[in-house]
Image (cartoon, rainbow, N blue to C red; front, side, top):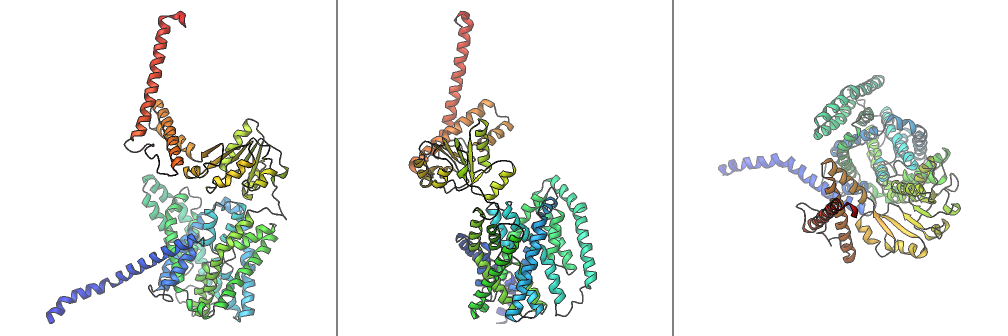
Length: 633
């Protein structure tokens, strides 16, 4: 028996030694697996990734199935994700752009945070019976909106640089800047025993200013020269290392001074905003930001006390609905007071009506400062979470308001009074602008139509009249003079347009040739049978142009380049015809160039070479005959 115990002791010790690793691997696999599932589901439903992370964390956390523990410790680690987020926000703060948006950032943004925060503070104090300090610690964080929800939506839809998107970005930017003062206010109101290692307030402010100045100088005289050195060696992984070093080092510096790590990361981003390597750093840091911010929301879901919601679901729902309603009302009035139309104001208010992710952080700090009970922190964290649930639905209304014409402000003019032209160009983006220029070059009268107010406003700055409307609607086309047009050209970026959409237009205006821009060959197959006069894949010609440029740089013979282009067009046309006949993308797959050549492509090239050689031989024979008999010439 002694022998058996002695023999098994190392094994038991080894198992015990592996336990933390096993736990880490198990919890990591569970978190990532459940997060992947829920994010996919919520993305599919159009509800955003943030809610997927929150629900996944709540499900597997200690208040759910209990598969993963230590939510608080994971939250502390995941807060680095917020630092990365603010670092990337700082990178966006190019001084020129900051100056252009100064009124929206420091005017509208400041007004939104202060007015909304104070109104919410007053309502919490009057209706819920919290002390003034506790109400302030709850009201100010509730004034914030979710940068992690709103900004990705604006970027993915291409609206981040529109006038609407810039206003939303400006408000969110000031909210991010306001986090540091809010942390300071909560710390000043704290009832907890003072940290003996923390410096006095005045000294802390001095340290903070010195640290910011030091970070700016380090960015100019250390980080930028270091980035130039890394760029010279061309080592991509070193850019990743330097990017992480800048974020972590600046955050660590601020943390050592008992200041927000997010402030350090933000300052680090600002100091690199003018760097020529800013985009490289942004691309390298972005994946870490996405992962860590996802972990942050998972951890928030884990620490969210679901029992608080289950104990009084009606109260939580009413508080969440009240939060959204108050923020919509206040922000609508504020944006309207800054001279914007009612629809723009309401659209922005709906977009920013939810609570923000930084609220979780500030509620935790308020609880640590003994300003509110942990139960109150859990309650308002649940309120913020439920307000985030409403965001995807409210975003739909906000987008409809953004893309609808205003009736009380700068009204967008429809095409009713547009001069009747020979051509209608539907969609005046980067594609439609080139098409319209070619028509203008031959003095063709053109009516331009677009449904994006931001594009219409931008075109107006360049003295180009674009009319508002949906060019796929028959009634609008008639008002625009489609019955007199010789050609209607669809340059819109919409991969969902198919034969069912275009066929009524072709039938309604038989005298007009309908030309369309399509996304790819799948959309080209989808519009087959609509009766259009022609279609162009949006990147086909530019891809050929770039391919020819590449062959030229490789010193390929010009005659061979011409053969390759001709062969490629023939093969593509044959393949496309087969795909349309069979309704299958796999049809005609041999009619393309691939590694090793390919029988069909080689055959086409060989025929082109023979044709060129025969033409050259015929030209030589003709020259010889003319030389032998000059009079025949």
